[in-house]
Image (cartoon, rainbow, N blue to C red; front, side, top):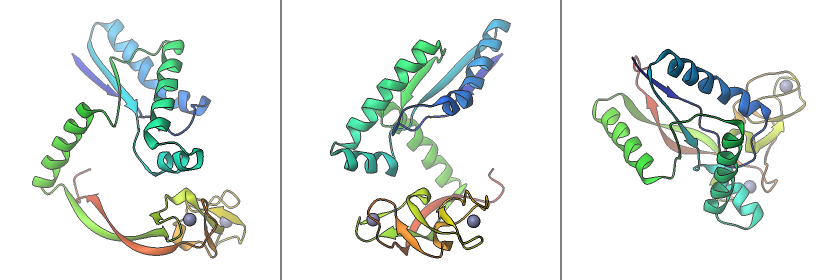
Length: 192
Ligand SMILES: [Zn+2]
Ligand SMILES: [Zn+2]
């Protein structure tokens, strides 16, 4: 039997901690199990080298996003080797091969109306001139009145939308972000 295992792709913007390893380990156990049974296994994963947290860290350290991604990708590979992980292929999202495969899948989904474009409002910092990921917006929880991050309030465990915070500040510069329209692709109904 052919078995494909697509492990989680760790984000290359910081070192791995024990929580990362616990979520990645299950894929490796499965891969070993099926190989031991004599099945044909393809176990793949890679470093996620794209995204805002990487560019923010790069700006803070005065280096390029590529340097940050390279540094942590190298660190991840070293950790996985020391831990004895058995990936058949461990790559990265800024790899040309990865771009080609992802674009092919995306174009196919688009052509078959499996995804569609929608305009949504997202927190935008005009000082930093960028949209902010949820956890880069901080402020006051509308439910309990304590300090909270844009994705959730640790005090009352409510899942939040960053624009719901009563007072909002950009985690990078401290200024108040505003809501701004942005386009994203969404799965069409019944696709997933
Ligand atoms: Zn709260
Ligand atoms: Zn800002």
